[in-house]
Image 1: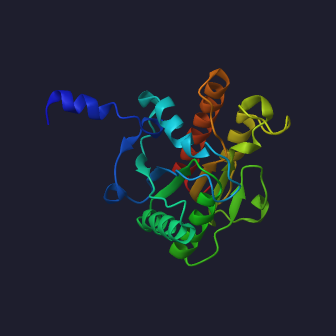
Image 2: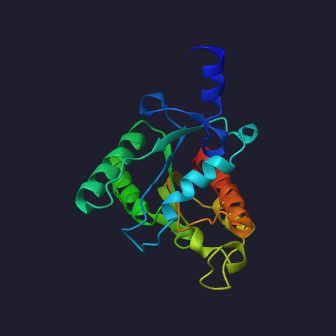
Image 3: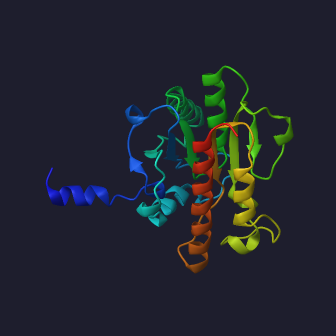
Amino acid sequence: MGEAAHIRFDTIPSFLGASIGDLEDLVPGQVAIAGYFCDNLTRPAAGQRYLARQLRYASRPEKAPANAIDLGDVNVFPLERDKHFSAVIAQCAAVLETGARMVLVGGDSSGLEALGVAAQKVTGADVPVIPVTGGVAGQLSHTQPVILSVDLQELAGKWVSHPRRLTGMSPAKMIAQIDATPGDVIAAAIFGLAPELDIRGGAETRAALAILQAVTERLEKGAG
């Protein structure tokens, strides 16, 4: 491969500027980040599937986490519900079986549903889902495998392009909740946001990117 080809490859946008790889590249403890291009199955809202694309283009390579990898997008079949869930569950399970941790970015909350089923298949037990707003936190042991649910619709109205309410969480508060998530966080889903391509959309994209950074760091930590 020539020098020009190397340059073109190196400039492909990735989540947080992380290296780009495939399932075969994963090792235990690594954080695998994948886009979820589906927003018409659970609490549908057009445009949520584009969050992964926006966060990739907004990422800066100089802040790349050392132990994360961009797996690309999971294969989806949003017009064939049964086939869709079967495929997404299988892909998520394949990642978790390597011992890596997984983050699904974008789309609606159906990605979280598939991730939960995959985690149960791999661990052989129920894996609690902890919302970023809090919940069963006090009941969990240090080593309990958990999934973190980051619903970006919980952001306060001033942070989003199409606010449904004024109250909610600031990005800083959401990040603090992510950092404080107990248990062994083996997976996470970030969803519920459709950034606009304008000034306000740029602000919410930067907020979502900071939240993705916090989620990645929390998964790198493992048991907490």
